[in-house]
Image (tube, rainbow, N blue to C red; front, side):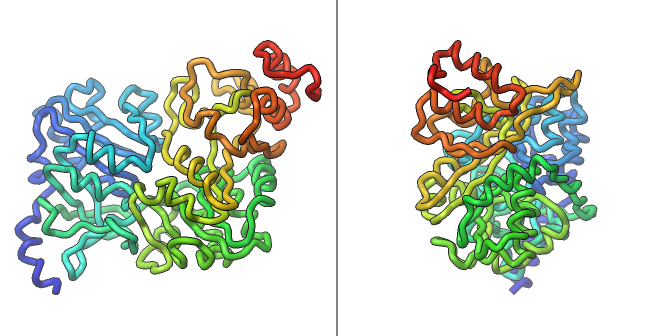
Length: 447
């Protein structure tokens, strides 16, 4: 009964200021991920700036503001890190106030168990239930392993967080918590809707023929995955499943269209599986106390072995650029950090090993320079100093608005020919010349 835990709850309940008093010089503090950001504790910790030195904080896909980063541009007191940048964290990186931690997501739990130090974890949770458990909500994908590694666990109760059913590790018991913080939280702000453009829809139209009835989907975040969801909703494709690192409004759209049933999944049948969720208040309302979905740690969701067990697994992710060798840059533009490795490699490996599975990496064929508006091709001759997210040996389908090509098993000249075929026509002749210089263009190739 709840009354069995009320005494312990009252003993551990404290103000944010009292809780953050445990942080010492040189500590590593973890804010976990997404809506797990501890808003009240972050504000209280920032107020201790002048009495602390070299406190390092980690987060992931966290929206702003992050007070400990904003209050100390000198970074003598607080240093912020992220292992997958949100748009806000990207701006912190641009200002030199955030440092990226490379990480393949299915190894998240192992990183924390074997390599990463956590002195204090501060995580937002939903209110305690009658059994003494706090729910990690849409933060389930990462929170459990971090809390187990931490020397001190502080939970911040946020009544706006949806309570998510889980496969495992979706909760933490009060007996594992050191401090509990309560306070006022504003309702979550809806993210601005992602507007799909004509090129997004064209790319999506090229992918749709590869999706069969009963397929299980992983969709990344962005306009192209959203367009895929919009178009599938208007097709006669049936009985789709969800197995995705990040659950977004695209899956809610598929549910509303009656396409997302999960009834033909090879594993976790009847359950839409995800690790974390970011989206609208309507998305969180759909996930709240919904027995048709299950949140799991990323060590399960993103494990290629798990993904490979799902027949007809279709993975759809985006990238920044591809070179003629098939290398993919998906997390940075030059040396500017944009997002992170995330689960792209996980789902490339897992979906390609699935019976009937397919892994797509999508991009618009061109982009405009932020400074002068010049148009550039996203299919480039060869990367030179760019950060490679996915090696050419792992890349499967590449899609632009000009079509889809499959690079598996293809030689260097075949890759060059296929990729130039889906480049913007204005850049094809130039790319052919570059391929010739690199000895990856046969004289008999098409022009």
